[in-house]
Amino acid sequence: MYFTRRVFQILISGLAVLVGLSFMQPSVAETSRYEVGPIGEPLGELNMQVWRVPVDLEDGGGTITLEATVFRPDGDGPFPLAIFTHGAEPNAPTDGPYDFRPDTAIRWFMSKGYAVAALVRRGYGRSEGQRSVLDGLGWPELLTPHRERANDINSAAKYFRDQPFVEGNRMVMVGLSAGGNGVLAAASENPKGVQGVIAFVPGGGAINRNELEDRDLTERAFRAFGATNKLPVLWVYPENDQFYSPKLARIFFEAYAAETSAEQELVILPLEGEDGHDILLRDDGPQIWGAAVDEFLDRVMP
Image 1 (cartoon, one colour):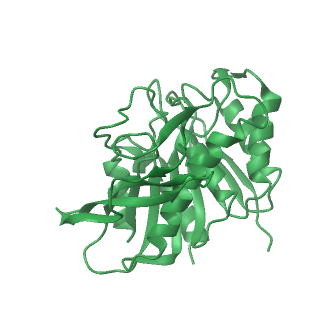
Image 2 (cartoon, one colour):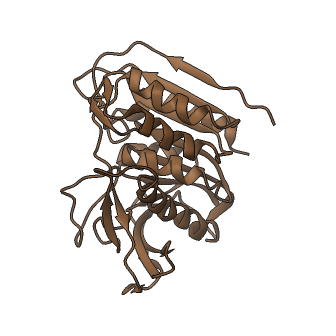
């Protein structure tokens, strides 16, 4: 199948912040202390419900569970599902509440008929496992944390695909910052039922918003994951992202896109302010990215 590759550029003015890259590393012979599945009943107008999602560790050392908060339209469904995942925050708690709730984005997807699962990756909040860090890693060790994050996300897709409220062949993955890298890595495994990926401000290895510490290493990592990806991806950046300028955004995009025949679309959006790295979390987010995301979903969802 032939996919077109389009790069959209729209002049912007200021915004964007990149969240540091940190990830979870499995521990040996780990057994979850939680039961898998929903906790309690759906609550409120968004039918919010906390779930525990099982993840088999990459080294075969056991199974952990991750916390995901599910939001869904009224009724039994089934609904298409958007799986959201967050950035990397060094100061986020490892054993207590960590709320990842981009409320306006959740409501926007629900208005389109989607259920949303906001996944908290390992080592954050009440999700089990330990975080690993990318600092100082060379090749190929650099790929390991990304694969761990991909395992978290794809395990969630596999688990929710079989839930009765989900249309198992109509899922999309949405990641912010380090979570954007995560959904790109997850897409490289072409998870069953996932039709497309939306990566908000992915990147890494920046000295400042215009320079990379080791461009060859960064490009090599993006190419490695692009090489096995068969899913269409929408890449979304504000022009004023604090960590990644449009110049760096194109470097990341072109490295990944060069290795895949699947549709890859880069959208650089105008935004007022000093930092737009939180573009998915902003109350006015859908006004900024809604049209591009809506067009992408119309194309890729069956």
